[in-house]
Length: 146
Image 1 (spheres, rainbow, N blue to C red):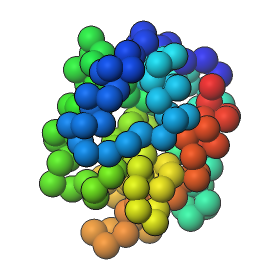
Image 2 (cartoon, rainbow, N blue to C red):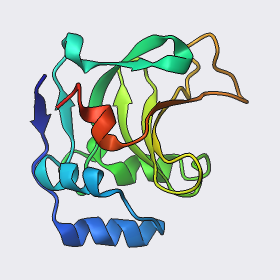
Image 3 (cartoon, one colour):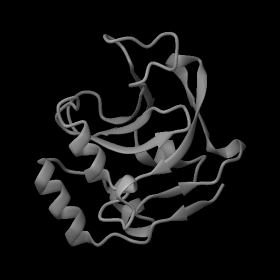
Image 4 (tube, one colour):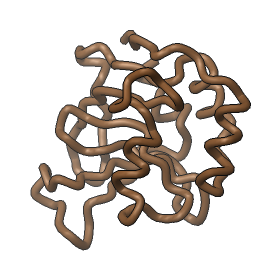
């Protein structure tokens, strides 16, 4: 699988982002931002991620970056749009072809990567339950992608 990266992030920009949202990003995700700063994922069989609780796969489309030249690929754009819907310590880091979002949980009991089916594409999704755990760490999530 390949990723058409958006460039590289600077550590100062990442720290400013963390301060703005009052959170600390995990080191593996910071490393990803420093090397890729997000990007468009090649559409092949490797862009699929199995979501155990959905008993199915999602197809990763884009991983967002910080301060990219593409407004729709900026984490800030999506954080502003969903600020009232996000839990403390949660960061929207990407999206899927199925119109859902990848969310990095940075604090609390539920740290890791989740899939947020905010458009209810899957039959099990509803107003009470539409967030599905994917992986404990960004590294575990990205193993099949990068």
